[in-house]
Image 1: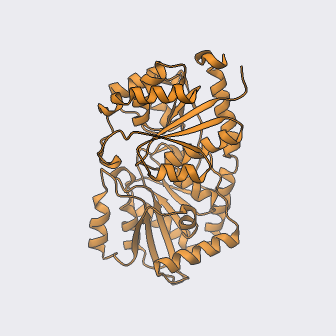
Image 2: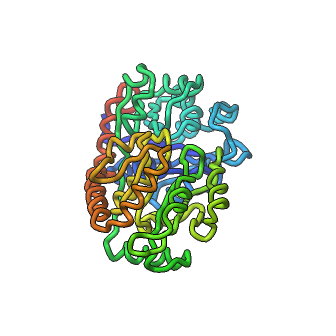
Image 3: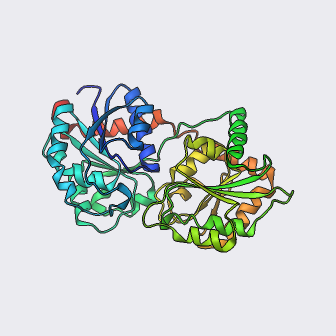
Length: 383
C-alpha cells in the first residue's frame, strides 16, 4: 500500500456553512500531511472557492447542478443529482481519486453512484441529522465508511450504518493573542458604531428556523445593560436561508431592537467578529455539533448552548452553560450571569480553550487517514 491518497472533496459552490468550513480545515490538514487533495465545486465562484483558495487548496470547477440558487433548493433528491453522474465519474478518473469524501447530503446523493462505478471509495462525513430518505439511505449503503461529528448524530443513524461508522469531533486551528482580541474588539465596535465599553452578545450561523436566532432578541429585550452599567448590544452574523427564522425580524420590530441588534450577514474574518463578543449563544435544536461554538471556545469567548445536540458531549458547567432551547428565562439568566461576573466569564473562557486544545487539525487528519487505510480493500490502486 502507498503512503498517500488522492482525495476529492466535492461541494456545491453557492452554499457555505460550518460543516463546509470544518471540512476545508480537514482538507488542508490532509494536504499538509502529504496527501493530494482536490476541492471540486459545482458552479462558478462562491465562498467555497474563495475559502479553499485562501487555504492553498487546488480547486476544480464542475458545471453547476442547477440555475436555482443553492439556498433556494430543497434538501432532497433532485434529478440534478443524477445528471451529474458523467461529470463526477469523469472527474474521479481524470484526477485519479482514491477517496471521495462528501460533507453534505447533496454531495452524498450525487457522488455515491459515480464512486460506486469507479475505483474510488466513498467516505460520508455525517454532519447532519438522519431523516427517512430513500436517496440518502441508498447513498449510505454505497459509502465505505461514515464519520459522524458527535455521538448525538451517530446515535440517530440506523444500526447498519453505525456498523461501518465512527465518531470524530471536528478540529479547530483558531487562536488569538490577548492583543489581537483587544484589537478585534475595538475594530468591530468601531465598524458597528458601538461604544467601546459596550457588552456584545453574538449568535453565528445561517438564520434558519432550527438555529433559533430569535432567542437573541428575547435576551436583548430583557437585558439592556450589565450590572456595572454597560449598554448591551446584539450581533446576529450569518446568511438568510430557508426555512428562514422569521421570528427574528418580528421580535426585532416588536421589541424595538433595530439599533441594538445588528445583522451584518456573512462576515469575514469571522474570528474577529467572534472575538469582539462578550458571550456567544447557540440556541439551536437538532444540532449535530456547532462549529461556531467550538470556534468561540478556541477564541476564549464564553458560550451558552442548547442541550438539544452534540455540544453537550463537550460542554457543560466549567467550560460553558447549557440551557433547554425553549426555556427563554434560562437563556436570559445565563447571559446575565456571564455579563455581570467578569471573573466567572474568564473562568469559562479559560476552560473552554482547554476543551478544544486537543482538537487539532493534525490529530484529526491522522485519525481520518487511519480510516482511509482501513478501506484499502475498497481501493484497487492502493490495495
